[in-house]
Length: 191
Image (cartoon, rainbow, N blue to C red; front, side):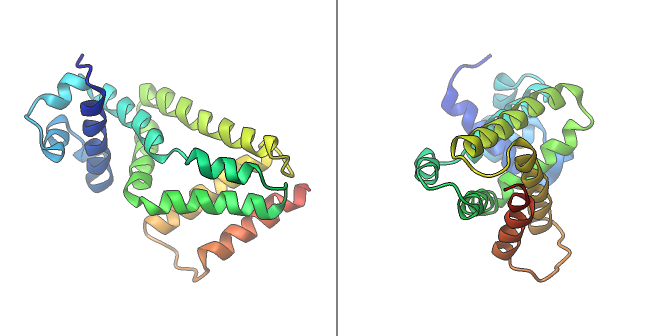
């Protein structure tokens, strides 16, 4: 397998763009090569199978979506409060809606994982790690609630993002208003 990490990331980023634009059916090694502007066969050198390509995309998407450590440090220094939880959730929504193609690619990966056990394992590990990091932040910051409330926020935000980045129900509510209500109702009740 080829070892150039910059080239691997370039290909994975191209794969994420293809996945967001064309869905899992449009994701081929040839489409990734074309999107990345590299010779045909390059993606196959880095990701020798479709399963390897999908797993590589699952890995890369969370590198790209990772929170800024400086922002997390700033949030972590604040006094525990519902306002802190709200700002943390706002930051998540800003990051994920700020790069809508990445979030759409994640939705595609999650759907594809429901049909592919090998991807389900790889993506599941990454999703659980992200959830554990969110729980750790929540607990370390001394915020009200715990793992259950963080899971409720994940479920709610996933639905909010799906609505915002795909075909919407167009309920007419401001996203910031929704985020505040989610925190007060899902976490505030635990405090």
